[in-house]
Image (tube, rainbow over all chains, first blue to last red; front, side, top):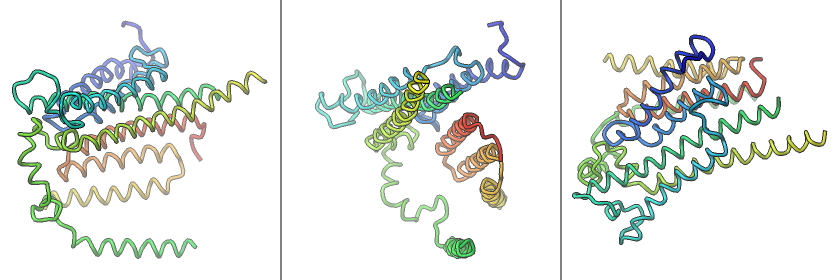
Length: 146
Length: 99
Length: 80
């Protein structure tokens, strides 16, 4: 990574801002139970990092995710959420009742924290991929028009 | 027509501004929304859900079904946008082939 | 008392930016002023004691500004 992308501003903003934004998004996701944050904010932050890297480096960016893959991953995120909801149904609970999740835990609220983390991962993937997806569709259409 | 719209706007704004005194102050314990179910959440959230952040606890645990609906709405919005814009792209490709 | 003064100033600036968005002729300038409006709303949410909503508003303000600018670039209508 010694090649320069363009001017000094683009170079510095790619090397400093993009990794910081991605790591901060993951921190917001995993720390969302103890501090302000959660799935939606983490997904939007991660999408902002990837969109920034795409705006700087173009379509051949290192962190790039193409539009077709983004649609699939958005579905996968929603499916993770719904699966976490359906899983307790097979172990004697209600829909989205985290007390019946089949994970080893000593106390009940640990199971609840595990369920909250799982559904927030689902929300994060869905929001992030939807934002990338819409931006990709808009820019692709512009390429055709040109 | 523009005059009538301006007059209606001024009247409505005045009515809203006159009613500001009737609103409860921010963080008032005795106001109606803070007395219905909020004390229950504040007391039991840490013990029930294991998350000290009450907003996350309510959004993801007590109201988990609503958040599932929100996520589905996001997903459907993304898919709709992609379908509409990709449709244009296919038409453009066909038109370009004919030319 | 100082908090009230800051809050009143922020609310007045919010109304001012909204009127500016409506009145300005340049579309790109309207998008950028919308970003300033969003930042004002973030500060107001923080003063009302809801950091979650403020965080969401900050991130979504950035992402929506990116959307506006990309859409304007693809429309080939920068001004007028």
